[in-house]
Amino acid sequence: MAGADAKATALGSYRLEDQVGFYLRRAAQRHAAIFAEHMTDDLTPTQWAALVKLAEFESLSQNLLGRETAMDAATIKGVVDRLLRRGFVATAPDPGDARRMRVSITRDGAAAVERGTGPASAITAQTLRPLDATERRQLVDLLRRIG
Image (tube, rainbow, N blue to C red; front, side, top):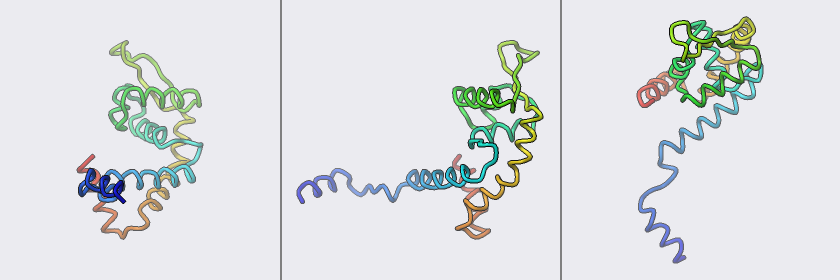
């Protein structure tokens, strides 16, 4: 028991189960599993986010697409590359600044968004199912504030 006592002293009152990150990670893992089970076209959450933003704006610089979807430059580049290989997006130099790459949604990408919108709404509903309507709104509002 001496080892357990030493560990308890070193940790003080810190308990993993009391930490917000622990529960955020568990919730994210649950959501990711639900997403993978129900999303169409074998899209990942990051690919879906990029396609939805491109469906909204039609065309964005790759940099702005990353900011709009909360992805860093390396992540958005990988997402765009994968979507490009699947024919869901097209890229071209930005006419206003050749150093920038513009990303546009294609017809196939728009069709994937159409197919995925219903399942995406169902994914959100299933993720939030343990909460009542008031708790759902509160959770989203609170996450928006800390994000």
